[in-house]
Amino acid sequence: MNSIPTFSSMTPEAGLKKAMELSRPDIIAEISASNLKGRGGAGFPTGVKWNFAASAHADRKYIVCNADEGEPGTFKDRVILQEYADLVFEGMTIAAKAVGAKEGILFLRGEYTYLRPHLEAVLQRRREAKLLGPEVLGAVFPFDIRIFMGAGAYICGEETALIECIEGFRGEPRNRPPFPVNTGFLGRPSVVNNVETLAWAACILQRGADWFKSHGTEKSTGIKIFSVSGDCEKPGIYEFPLGISVLELLKKVGGEHARAVQIGGASGLCVPASEFHRAIAFEDIPTGGSVIVFGPQRDMLEVLHNFLEFFVDESCGQCTPCRLGNRKLLEGVEMLQAGTCSMTYLRELCALGESMQLASKCGLGQSSPSAFLSVVKHFRDELMGRVTLPTHG
Ligand SMILES: Cc1cc2nc3c(=O)[nH]c(=O)nc-3n(C[C@H](O)[C@H](O)[C@H](O)COP(=O)(O)O)c2cc1C
Ligand code: SF4
Image (cartoon, rainbow, N blue to C red; front, top):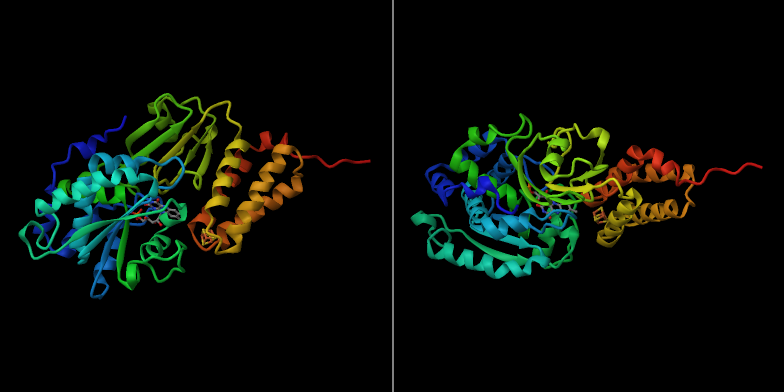
């Protein structure tokens, strides 16, 4: 399935027209009341982010749409941009009105270059319809959007690396604070939001915060778009309310016989069948939307090998815990596969993974050991058969 029913049911530009009638604080109040949390994975409250940027004093502010979508198993932003680009640009324009920005930048994943002509055509159509340009909808509100092409590095999805990249530097995360809402693109306050977050912002302005809150849980309001792949009958794009249990989701996609599910991509959690009752929500299992189903025959060490190779390749190398830690974890998996890893060394690798979570500079190194640690925790019996036992004699 590739259509998103709720997005399809929206009236074009109704959210933007509503925003044009509201004051800046009232737009932010509506987003805050909806309790929309960022759909890129971290789940930061969007209303709070917009409010910080709106309160910052600066000659220029920016709205940056994060369409880098590099997390393994995630492809929902690609579909949203292909099918609902107007809704995303509408959301960016609403965000601009709310914080006082005049320029928007869509950071598009290098692998999505083929989408660029379509997106440029949508932007041009919006300019002609006065939905972008010097006077949006006839008001004294200039705003336009340009597209910046990424070059295929996963780390450039991290918001400060993304900003470095747009500025023309190597895509490496900055120290935080200061945060982009205060010191972002060219040192100016910048809102960086995920593609899906911006589309939901437009829906919320159109239908209201109460409509959004009528879906999901108290702490994780609304609907979420999921990219489902792996060992299931119906992989694809789905919308489900947050709070759905792993098992309910698996039943919908024909994957209920899975032995485990990776939620949140390679940097997410590996959830075993014994925990399929858990909820996909920020208060339990958070996610940017990637769901990878592992069927009964999957070798979890092979899965880990695959993820860790990815992190070794994608680490920017700036800090030691991530640069070396991912290599050590990958070597450890290879030792387990070869039957040369002792129990003591496996314990040391787990301690290393925990140190990486604490000591890495950015979210890549902080989350890259998660899959390793959850597989060791939940598939202990299986791994015990692969460790070398001490010999006596
Ligand atoms: C290594 C790494 C990669 C990331 N990749 C993406 C991405 O592709 N898309 C995205 O929206 N957020 C990504 N993020 C999260 C962003 O840093 C940021 O939190 C997000 O764009 C904020 O938008 P939101 O509040 O709307 O979710 C990534 C974070 C890290 C640490
Ligand atoms: S955690 Fe990894 S990706 Fe992030 S700054 Fe350190 S080396 Fe770079």
